[in-house]
Amino acid sequence: MKVSFERIIPSAKSSFRTLHNNSPISEFKWEYHYHPEIELVCVISGNGTRHVGYHKSNYTNGDLVLIGSNIPHSGFGLNSTDPHEEIVLQFREEILQFPQQEVEARSIKNLLELSKYGIHFHHKIKKIMLPKLKLMLESEGYKRYLLLLEILFELSKCEDYDLLNKEIMPYTIISKNKTRLENIFTYVEHHYDKEINIEDVARIANLTLPAFCNFF
Image 1 (cartoon, rainbow, N blue to C red):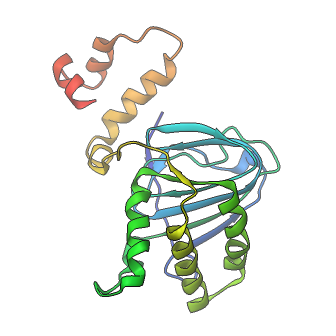
Image 2 (image 1 turned 90 degrees about the vertical axis):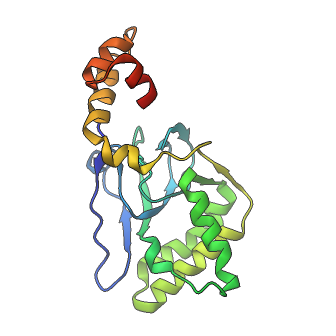
């Protein structure tokens, strides 16, 4: 399994990216990847697999997940079937800088901290947020930005969610050891149906056995 870096370009005349994907599932990219942008994914309907950080599970009847900066994840078209439709918002935390005295914004800051674990919002929250996400596709300029703030503020106030990971996957592991991790994941992917010899994996990582155990 390769962990690839994805470069995100904001939408035209916007500080963040808005996507509406409703192409055939064969055209979706689902590779395990990461990027500095925080990502809010709303799968409008359908079934598939969510893979965020260390967590992997299946979703049914759509999904709503907030993924923190540099957290590796797969596209939500993974193992899904047509029709598959999703709305995706990708934004950098820098566009949400608020003064320390801005009490109203603290809940958004807390939400972004929790996003480092991956946040799965329950279906009733997805149902509530869907009209605003659809409106986002029609909005421009400052109205689109204010709508982003409104969406994040409402999500920060809800309690119907689950954290997908118990610990944060460190960005330094991905950025400094990208090639080594790709080699390890690829080996495991090709040999998952056999007994894995840890000494073989250590050699692939070009590490001694004790060093590999500490690293992994």
